[in-house]
Length: 227
Ligand SMILES: Nc1ncnc2c1ncn2[C@@H]1O[C@H](COP(=O)(O)OP(=O)(O)OP(=O)(O)O)[C@@H](O)[C@H]1O
Ligand SMILES: [Mg+2]
Image (cartoon, rainbow, N blue to C red; front, side, top):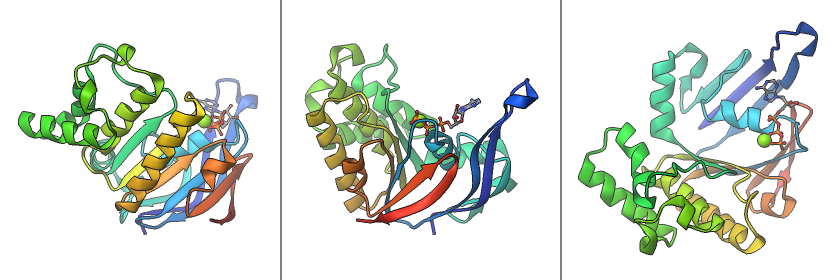
């Protein structure tokens, strides 16, 4: 099992004690290596909170999270960062590219954090950009690319180090339906080539592309069916 959450809770505490938000309530969830899982749910239901915890960007208040055999609640921040850097690629709705860097530099940057040598970085980044069809845009800045192209750069960045898990939070939210469809095809292809993919989406058609769908409702997770 790649991911195992048990009785997991996450509450956002505010200074005003009456205003705590129980964003995740007693969540149990398992994801197998190589699976394609989609997560749907209304705005504010807790999807991004769940994704942040799955992606090791946030920690639960209670319950357990086992990632690839590691009990996350027992690890130091440094150990958690190392696992995140090595094992997880992120794709967000707002592409989160660095405006002053070129396409190639944006994709190569996380590899630098992983200690990959300069020449190997350029090679891996070029290969990832080739996979998303952007070999002809290596030296463009994000502002010189279309939205769909920027999201393809973000996907290349997520996959350049071949992380076992890809987490995508509304990756098509800012795209027209044609570019969105291309991104969805890419996620499917990545899954077929062995990556575990977790997709958060409002779009029920996109969600059905996954092997398994879960739904978040007011902080609770329920199984929603298999494709
Ligand atoms: N940093 C925070 N501090 C306090 N409350 C928060 C914080 N982040 C989220 N929340 C609250 O937690 C709940 C879940 O938010 P979350 O962002 O996980 O929803 P979501 O399902 O991703 O919604 P959307 O579809 O709009 O992105 C919401 O009620 C939200 O207001
Ligand atoms: Mg969200």
